[in-house]
Structure formats: C-alpha cells, structure tokens
Length: 215
Image 1 (tube, rainbow, N blue to C red):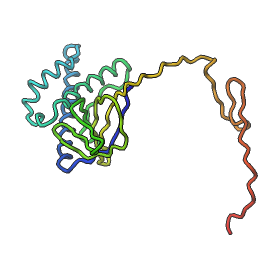
Image 2 (image 1 turned 30 degrees about the vertical axis):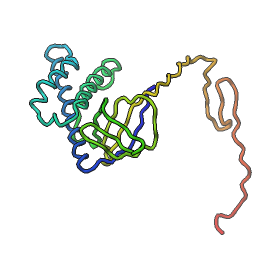
Image 3 (image 1 turned 180 degrees about the horizontal axis):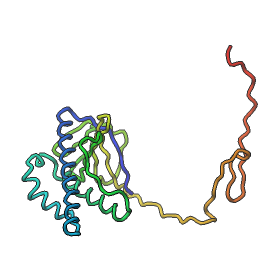
Image 4 (image 1 turned 180 degrees about the vertical axis):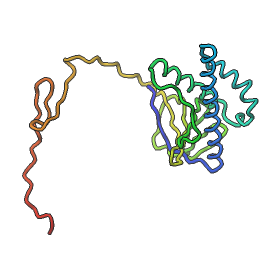
C-alpha cells in the first residue's frame, strides 16, 4: 500500500536559489510538453508519446537551453510523466483539460522519482544536485521509497512529500447490501433513528443549578 509522508525542510539561501531553478525548469518542460501534445493533435489528430517527447527533450531542447543541464534530469523527465498522466486522466475520467503552469503561482513543486536519501539519525534529506538539507523528520517509515515531491508553499515554506510502499496489502473491498448498510437520521425528538427502525434516545443532561453569572 502506498502512503505519503510529508516533512518540513530548511534549505539554505543558496539551496533556495537552486530549488527555484528546479521549479522553473520543471515548469518549463511541463509547459513545453503540453504545448507539443496540443499542437501534434491539432495538426495530425494523433498523440505524441512521452517517449518521443523525451527523445526531443534530450537531443534538441536541452542542448538549445543550456541552463536545463544544471537541473536533475530525473526531475525533468518526471514533468513529462505528469503531462502524460494529466491527459490520461482527462480522457478516462473526463476531468478538466490539462492547464499550463504559471510562474506567478505562489505554490511551486517538482518531483524526484529516485536518487534521493533520508537520514532519520541526522535529520537530513539529501537531494541530487542540491545536497544535504535540514529537515524535521517527525515520523519514521519503513518500506520502499517511491517518488518524492519537493514544494514551496504560498507562505515561502519548503516541504518534501515522500510516497512509500510499505508492502501492506490493501483490504478487500466490501460489497454494500441492505443487510450490511444502515441509514441514520438525526432528529430532535430522538437523537437518531436508524433505517432498521431502531431509535437512539437523546442524552439526558442533569439539571444545572441556578448559579449567578457574576459573583
């Protein structure tokens, strides 16, 4: 079973600048990939795959934008995965069409699928190309670490959210039937009336003494 653990992190002034570069680079790649998906469909009525976008990103976009080479490559590739997931969700679940990310949004984030570490003994989070960051690791976990999301809140605070597979099996789904389901109607005369006819009386409070409001 996958479970997320969120921790506050305290990057240095230099690390904040580097995180800002990561936010911007991943936003740039996301918007570029989204634009390519839209243009390709408009022109050919076909969808461009994530792997085609990855090939173009590596061989064309990064060489033309040298600043992208300073950013962790896995974080950039995660942006392509997010675009693909947004389109899949749109077509399958009929949710809103994917939107471009804005630099004006006070909340920014990027993802790292691997190559980061957590040290509970020293309260240090180590991110590739960014280094060791102090953290408040108030809860320990066991299991395989999956994707980590690094974010900056609207108030300027920084967090890391780690998705962990604790290898616990999900409970089996229970079917709902009339015999296993009870409706509850909260009322005035009775505290609650169940759909099976059972009534729950209102709790009876003792008489309050007529104490004066003031001494």
